Amino acid sequence: MLHEPTGLSSRSCHKRGVDPFTLETPCVQIDLRRIELIDAATVALLKTMSPSQKWEMANRMVIEAREAISYMLKRQHPNWDHVRLSEEVVRRMSHR
Image 1: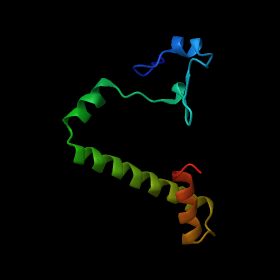
Image 2 (image 1 turned 45 degrees about the vertical axis):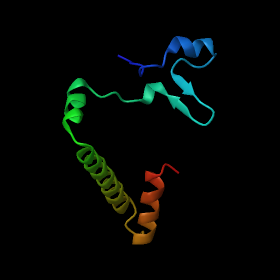
Image 3 (image 1 turned 60 degrees about the vertical axis):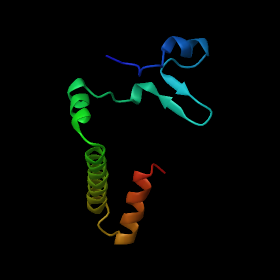
């Protein structure tokens, strides 16, 4: 089932002549079909966490993503040196 974030209505998008699943602002276009919603259990867990715990969790996710991308690139390009690998990891993580 597809859910729309609170405050965003497909009807209001239609009135503006915009794709009902796209939110457009002057500098950003957001495809509402690509937004992942969290379930009630995750919300409940996050509410029990302090800001520092949430920050640590987010930081750990970034570190693990960087490590996974680096590992994949090392396997795909065994001839790349450390500098080239690092540059590609940064490029991929910054969505450039």
